[in-house]
Length: 468
Image (tube, rainbow, N blue to C red):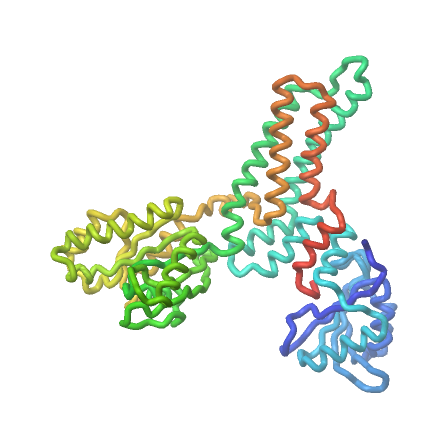
C-alpha cells in the first residue's frame, strides 16, 4: 500500500493566519522542493543535514512567491518515516494556494485524508491504535480526552495489548508444537500455568471493556438534559452554566420551542448541556413538538437536571400539596427513565422562605438550591456532576478505551478467551484449544494493526483531516 508518490497538503487549518505550513513527504520531497526554493545564503537543501531550518524564497520562475522557512527531516527520522519537507509561509490564502499549485506542477500530488499518518503506520513509525489516537488528539477539546489520546499515542494501550498477545502467543506456540507430536501424547504447555495466564488475560480484557463506558462519554462529552415545567429557569440555568447568554430568557412560558445545546469543560471533563422545552400539557402544535423532542433528548442523555421553581407553591392550596405535585411529576420522569442519573435543582433560592426550603428538603432527597439569575449555587451543580463520572481510572493512569473499533475487537477476544478457559476446564485437546487461541490472537492483532487489510485502513484514515 506504500505509494512512491510524493504527497503535499496544508498542515495548518485552511484560512488566513499569520503563518501556514505545507508538508511534503516522499522519495522526491527534497528534489521537488529544491526546484522552487532559493536559499538566501545560497545553500543547496539537497546537501543539508536533517532537522535543520533554512530561510529563503519560493520562486515561480523569476517571480518571488513568498519568503519562507524550509524544515528538513530525512528518512527514517521523520513523522512518516520518509523524506519530509515542511514549508512555513505567510498565512495568506493566495500564498498558500500559489505554493501548493506550484509544487503540484513540479511533481507532487495532493495527499488523501490521513495519508501522512497512514504512511507513518505502514513504515512502522506508529502502530494502528497510536495512529488512531492522532485523530483523537486533534479533536480533543477537554483535559480528560486530551490525556487519554496522549497516553494512547505514546503507546500505553498498545503496549498492554502487545504484552497480552505475546504471552498468549508463547503458549500458543507450545500448543501448536504439541500438535506435531500428537501421536506421542506429550504436553509442552503447562496446563496449570496456562489456565492462570488465561484468567489474567480475561481480567485485563474485562477491565478494558468496562473502561469504554467512561472513555466514550469523555470523548464525546457527557450529555445532560435540563428539564422541568415551562418558565422555571431552565434557560437561565443554561446561561449560568455556560457563563454566556446562549438561550433566550423570557417571562413568557414556552419560549424554548426546540433544544439548545452547548458544551463546557468541568474539572477536565466535557459536559454537553441540552436546554429543552418545558414539560406540560399544551394544545400549541409547535410547543407540543418541542416537548416531544424534550423526551427524545432525555433518552440520549446520561444525566437529567430537573429544575423546579418553589415560588409556584402559592398556586396550590398548601405548600404540602405543591410538594406532592412536584414528587408526582419527578416520579413520572424517573419511572420513564430509571437508568438515568437525576438531580433535582430548586431555583430562586433567594426568594424562597426557610419553611418551604425545609419542607422540600424533607420530601426530596439530594435537592440542590440555586439562584440561576444571581449565579448562586452553580459550583455545587458542577461538583455533583463530576461525582456522577467515575474518574478513578483517569487518576490511576490506567488505559481507557475510547475507540468503538477497539471495543468491538476486545469483546470478540474476550469471547474467544472464555472459550479457551472453558476448554481447559473440560480438558479439551490441544488442537481444539488452538482454534480459539488463534482467533483471540487475531482480534488482539486487529487493534494494533499487526493484522489489517486495505478496507479497514481505508475506513480508519478516511476520517482524518487532510494534512495529517
